[in-house]
Amino acid sequence: MLKEITTADLAREFGLTTRAIRHYESVGLIAPARRGRTRLFSQRDRVRLGLIARGRRLGLALEEIREIIDLYDAERGEERQILLLLGKLRARRAKLQEQVRELTSILEELDSVEASCIQTLTDLSGQAND
Image (cartoon, rainbow, N blue to C red; front, top):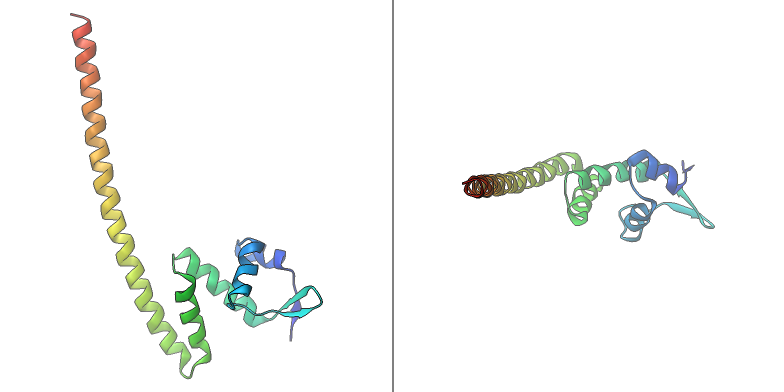
């Protein structure tokens, strides 16, 4: 059964913009029915939108999210979906861990340059007092 709910209501519920929801509709990730200009979202649309929002928070691309969501419709979809999601999560984690290593290195370099600048200022200040 379809329940009338506005795009704005879903945006608030999932912390999305109405523009994002319309975009997800335009790329076929959700497919609300229509009565005139009114969208009628099904429970399936709400679930899919929740999965999309979670996937985006995890940093997954829309095509990765589509791939995972579409497995629900396949035979034994849940197991295949979980395995696919697990692989994507592990890849995302590895990428984030590499970014953390890179950021840590940059922060260490910033600390070094900052300390050098402070030392130079201290030395210059000491020379001015001589």
